[in-house]
Length: 548
Ligand SMILES: Nc1ncnc2c1ncn2[C@@H]1O[C@H](COP(=O)(O)OP(=O)(O)OP(=O)(O)O)[C@@H](O)[C@H]1O
Image 1 (cartoon, rainbow, N blue to C red):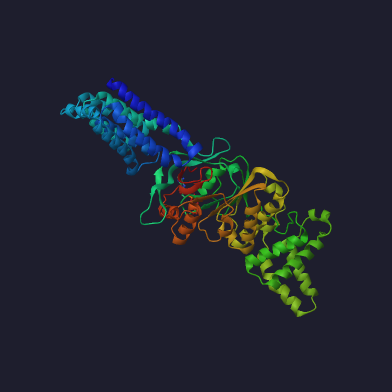
Image 2 (spheres, rainbow, N blue to C red):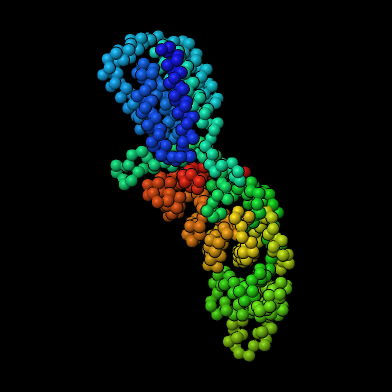
């Protein structure tokens, strides 16, 4: 057989394998292909190629191209190369036992060139530049050079040409057909996948179970909210590593309504109306379609959380509120009155002052006095907003809290807006995501008991009504009760050991060794990188976020 034809056959086999394996990986066999199909293919190649090429040396030279294939399929460790080499070993044995083949093969050794072929050096130069231009990979360039030099000593120009060409063709086939995560429709592009966590081929000797390691991956990472079990996600990471940037990347592409709780004024450049909460404000005593009694309890509980009030103070406020609603003609039993204009904090203070004058015993006066300072503290123009909250929150909205001066007021507005979202949410069921709510600096809300309870309910019940949440936090404290209802946890660099182990456990799932590997990487992630579990592939990946 012609030498050229032999190399063409070998190259074609490799290319067919490369073309077929990507179709097998995502669809049918998942990670199994990396552990079964590739090693098997490599072993068979190792056995068959020496017979086709009629040379052990050429087959070995070709092994370098095989390394490319391995690298591209993330089976980049030396262990995997041994599948091919062991195949060569089997071929060697067969050749040795069948003397004729052995003799033909050893002819190559005798043919070894002492003076390398200059044509091949020129070829090396051209191919190296081409490979670098196409792939920007020094690894592949080194592969071409080694392959060519090896072939030049064999004096086989075609081997140099064909096996080097495979260093270009293999990456070309894969680079230009990246593995797609989550399909092309309804997607939000997040960035490029750089690594994927895979289970090692052999169980660890000094530890129980398989060891996990990161291998290079190529592909794009998308979020498709409608494919999520619930629409909730958590973004966690130390300050300055890109949490808000990631949220902005999502929001700048999303087509549906959203509400962003922007605590530090970091979302001014995304689409949508920006509302300065220090100016517009809203009346926290609005009913938001609740009954006056329910709403009075909610407000009293909120003030209890904010100021750490006692039970008697909380009850006093609740009763006062019911009275204040009644003074405005709003009654629990008459639903038609619920749409009347609600009282304000200022009305509540006036009511206390009137009641103090009218009180007949000192106990009543003292109770009223004990809550008065808190209400006076909240007597702010911020709470005199007359705009209908429903109109305020329609469409794509950024609620800018950066100019609201006191944290108590900030919190009360936040909780009131969330309660209104919560109450209006029940009006309509939905099978798709209709509105995304982004809460930056979530601990600010979650540290208060009433805020935590509210967030927990919203997280658990939002899906049915087409509401999804993105909770952003620097630490996991207080996230425990909501994180289990989050489909996607996107973690950036963390440094606290407790945080690291908690989040690694969440992302790593039930595999203890995976958790260890994630822990180590999470503590050293660069800015703009994250570790997450891809929900469609169920793979843990490292993504470089395309920040906007
Ligand atoms: N993916 C990215 N690509 C490029 N630059 C980024 C990326 N992510 C973040 N940065 C840069 O890092 C800086 C901090 O980012 P960002 O404000 O998003 O961090 P953060 O985690 O939200 O911080 P904080 O918790 O303090 O709000 C910004 O200057 C931003 O431009």
